[in-house]
Amino acid sequence: MFSRILVANRGEIALRIIRAAKTLGIEVVCVYSKADADGPWLKHADQAVCIGEGPSAESYLRSDRIISAAEVTGSDAIHPGYGFLAENANFAEICRDSGFAFIGPSPEAMALLGDKVSCKNLARQAGTPIFPGTEDAIEEMDEAVEMAQLIGYPVIVKAAAGGGGRGMRIARNEEQLRAGVVSAQQEAAAAFGDGRVYVEKFLENARHFEIQCIGDSHGNAVHLFERDCTTQRRHQKLIEEAPAPGVDPERRNEVAHSAAELIRQAKYSGAATVEFLMDRDHNFFMLEVNTRVQVEHPVSELITGVDIVAEQIKVASGAPLSITQEQLAVNGHAIECRINAEDPDRGFMPQAGLIETWRPPGGLGVRLDSHATSGYRIPPNYDSMIGKLIVHGPDRETAIARMKVALDEFEVGPIRTTIPLHRRLMDHPDFVSANFDIHYVERWLDSDSVTAAEA
Ligand code: MV4
Image 1 (cartoon, rainbow, N blue to C red):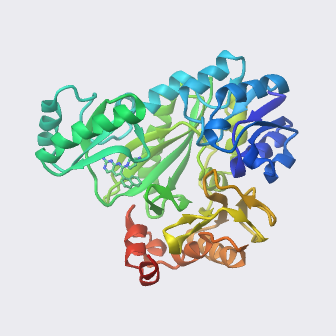
Image 2 (cartoon, protein in one colour; image 1 turned 90 degrees about the horizontal axis):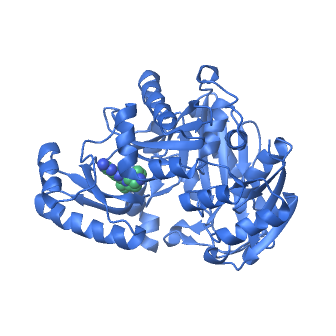
Image 3 (cartoon, rainbow, N blue to C red; image 1 turned 60 degrees about the vertical axis):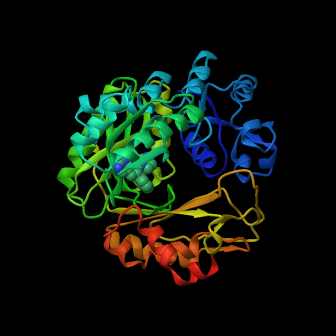
């Protein structure tokens, strides 16, 4: 096992990694930017090394400085968290070549699953359900047009190197398809240095469903069941829950098994998430694979009892997974609300500045993953998420009831947060019935009289 790991991240995930490492008896080094010099999580690290100015490009994205910090502190391994360099195969390779374990997959597995064309082809082999569409990147416009005629409009053009909604074009007829292929290729070439695009069937009004997987370096892979991430706005998740409400466990197990098989065939070590869309008849179609620990991992931890970050560290050190699929079961229901320092009444404008009041909730089944405290000044440089409130209960009704109480207890000021929005969502009939799709929050916010009047 490692004796010292370096955390190449900040905020709540840095604190989450510190907690897991300490639990395993491992020392922790944090790197931080000048904007994060007062970061409350740094007090919990054994050492902290400043690596540059506030802008991420001058600090958290500087692989050279992160490697130097690992060298001078005698670290054995580097945990990238999420965002920043977490899904950069080049960084994973630099870590390996510099003699540090990357707490995540090999650069080869990351590249294989990160490329959406190669990932989809591996999924086809592994039996993971995918959208019908082109098997390879488009070389001639005729391939796109013929595929669309075969599968029927609407179709979507996606960049092989894209993800998270970038470089996509929906086409409802041949004219839009021809234009979409060209513009998606141009956008992808400029954004990713890789203009390859492919075409697949476009599904409207779906739910967003994802399987948490973990693999080790001994050829084992398990799944920790699913999360439903349908409650989102502009590709930013607001609420995640596990298990997915209303989905038949047998059908879920089948999809989850196929996701774990995909991870196994990729010779993948570490935490991964296989994302799907689910249609009204509960058919699943893979979107992409995230090769990092995700923001919403705690809901899977609460329903399975597995410490996903500790498991990431263990498998990166070469240990086998500490759990088998047979030992895993779904226990109750968990819901996470992302607490963002944003003002929902003003277009979700990020709120930097001093937190004067910070009174966190508590009680049975209530977990708060946050680096914030009263007296903490939120820097303007980074993501606006200042914490995650996660509740667990025997069933979804109890989890919602506990979340309402916890949100009511939670006092943050004077900066605006998404806490009141979450409290209203807990009473939203479409959330309560789980009769929702990926656009319901946007439809609700657009039609909301208070919010609409402000905008
Ligand atoms: C799709 C889709 C419909 N059909 N692919 C958006 C982000 C990227 N991960 C994939 N995305 C989508 N791919 C097909 N074939 C709809 C979306 C999509 C979406 C997916 C998940 C969560 C929110 C979304 C919002 C808009 C579009």
